[in-house]
Length: 317
Image 1: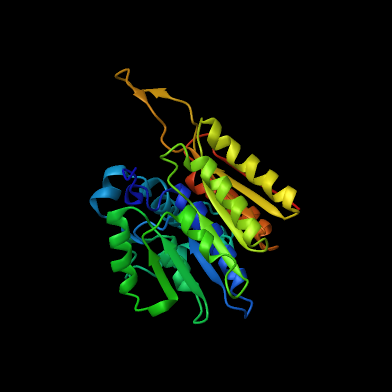
Image 2 (image 1 turned 90 degrees about the vertical axis):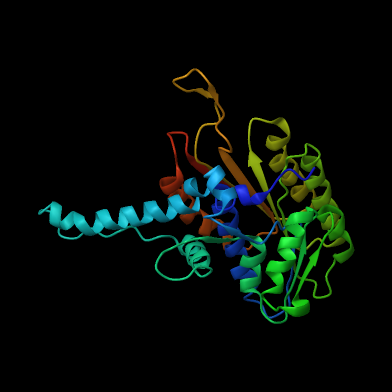
């Protein structure tokens, strides 16, 4: 049950998608003066070392956040050198990143010292906390004994007092007692590991229960896109839930490579790892779709590993 550790996956392409979407939503929701309560049902450890053993073992950040940084710098360098190399070109400008993608890069960079040496990756709890105002609240659920302890220690360094609460509880169940929040404004991020098959139906059941308790909250679900029926069913079931409730919805996906098995030179079968993921949002900000339509093509351009790299943005309601 506790075999999953997000430290192995921090900063991967799924985190790029998840945290770009999360930032875009939070920027919009915090424009309103009314206090906001944010819930993270599976908070993890909060902060991760990109130069640590876990990240180095998996190498996933190298194909995610670090690849995004590297490709952006490479493109910028090529653009700057192009006029000198091609005399007929008067001016070649480096592509400008979309505002939400640039916001994401700036956010991660703010957790690192200068000089471009990126060693720390902020998980959702720290990204959320960075955008909270004094009147807002953040409740973090984490059941893993080690990650919960690490999360508590990391949050304690913020000296945020009662603004941020760490609860060593099952986030699926723990969320129920807090809805609706006193301020009647809430953002719920639900992003379990899905290492347990029952996580899939529990996500849908949790969202259904949450919407019954508090229909006007903004609900955000991250999910993997893998060759598994339960994974493909999640966005379908969430869409049905939103439509039946008469709520708006948005589904964004990012694919960086094929999901097919391959064979190496030695004849060994190679699994592709996580090829794609999605973010399903119920009651999304009206600004989110346009923001993602501008940023997702750039994610594909920088993070795509083969010809199967693509994205999608669908919405309704």
